[in-house]
Image 1 (cartoon, helix red, strand yellow):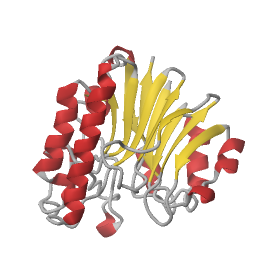
Image 2: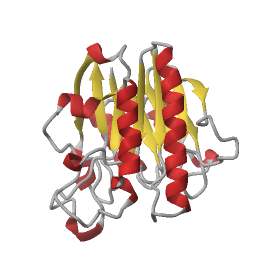
Image 3: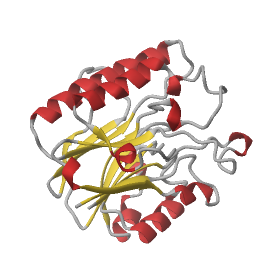
Length: 256
């Protein structure tokens, strides 16, 4: 079972490249983020023709998350992250696919920081930690996948000081990510590639993709029940080099 996550940065604008990637790599489950499409604008028909069923939570202009499945039913269990009834941003979707519970997340960016956007980001990550802890207690096989907007360690960003004030690298966000791992989740990319950068994001500015000046902010966390079945993980870096790309590349895991 191959599970991927991809911040597509506008699902309709990137639809041709998304479909090409799906055809070439054939992941079984895909978590998409940053749809930038209202609920009625999601390209369900095109994806169905490509062999993928879809569940999604859209939002006009910004945000939005989706789960795609190839030849499998998607049973949605949650469309919002619990803990704040007033949060109307589309950033969380949870569903069962082939006996695995999949949570697709798009954490807030948090910039500029300090400020209200960073406060919201940290509150959101606190809610994610609380819910993820409850999920673990079930003992079920689970994956949390998506754009966490957190660079976990200095090893997950190219050598630079230019990002030091950015919300992606602040110690509070890193501590929240580390807390997930302490609870029992495993960072699958790092588990399979302990000493490689495995970047998933390259800014459009200053030829950062061409210079491989990247960051790792897209993650796949596996529950203890799935860890023995984790066989491989990687990043489809070349997707970022295609014409008119998202600034992210897909990341993926393979489970036995």
